[in-house]
Structure formats: structure tokens, C-alpha cells
Length: 63
Image (cartoon, rainbow, N blue to C red; front, side, top):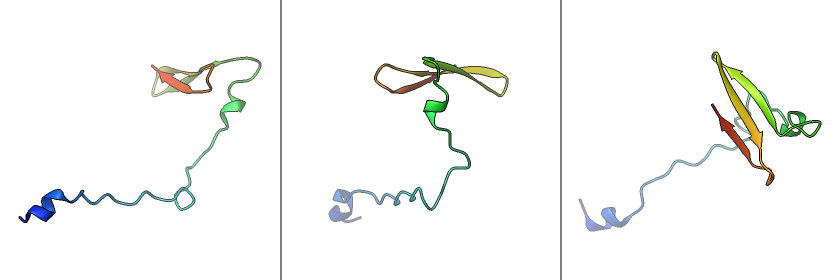
């Protein structure tokens, strides 16, 4: 193996364009956090998860 091959960064595949691979369903988070609510429950595979919106507008999902 040549030394130039060792110094080159590995090839990284290009990211797919979102328009080419749309998600199956999109939910606007504002529709979940209504009436001053900042937390909602999401049941998935028999387990309850909590989705919380912080004061800074970040989303946190916990089990």
C-alpha cells in the first residue's frame, strides 16, 4: 500500500436528498404541544416513551 493512500480520507457516500427519499409520515411538533403542554406520551411496542419539548425548543425522547 502506498503512503499516499494512507493519508487520504476514506470515501464517504453522499447523503440522500430529502426530496428524493421523503418520510412516510410527518407530524408538526406544534400539533403535539398544545394548550401549554410540553410533554406527550408515545406508546411503542407496549412501552411508554415521553417526548418533551425544552424551554429552548429542543426535543428529548426518553423511555
